[in-house]
Image 1 (cartoon, rainbow, N blue to C red):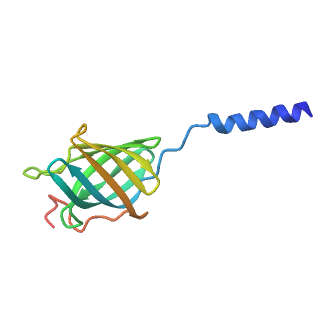
Image 2: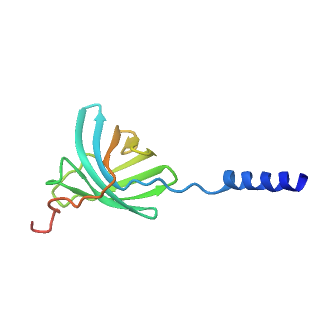
Image 3: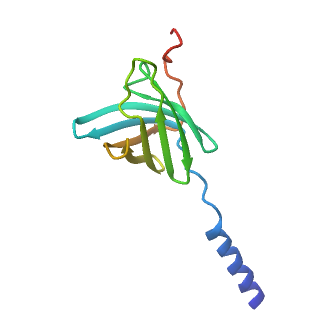
Amino acid sequence: MIERLGLLSILLLSFLVAPARPADVTGNWQVTISTSEGRMTGKASLKQTGDTVTGWVGPGENDPIPVTGTVKGNKLTIKTHPQPGRNAAFDECRLTVNDDKMLGTIDTNKGEIEFLRSSRKYNEPLKWPGKGL
């Protein structure tokens, strides 16, 4: 009996010590950015492979800005890569992932950003910048 309780205790502890899987951020998102200058909305589509994230963010599929990022646990950091002559609403954002919602800050507390998942499917944008489309 004592041996069984000991084995059960070890099994229960192993679940507590097991490393957490990174959050899954693949999908389409509605984005809201709030700063002291006002509020803007847009869209994003992200694709996650392991802890690496790629995709785009922008006003819509016709005006995408490529992004890259890294997921660690429930934290996501995204960096924008606008084409020369273009501006992005942020350079970098740090988000806390909670299933279908991500909240965080842009450019070291210059504003807040919220992502709400609209689907779990990644969508290529209708037009990639710099590709002549």
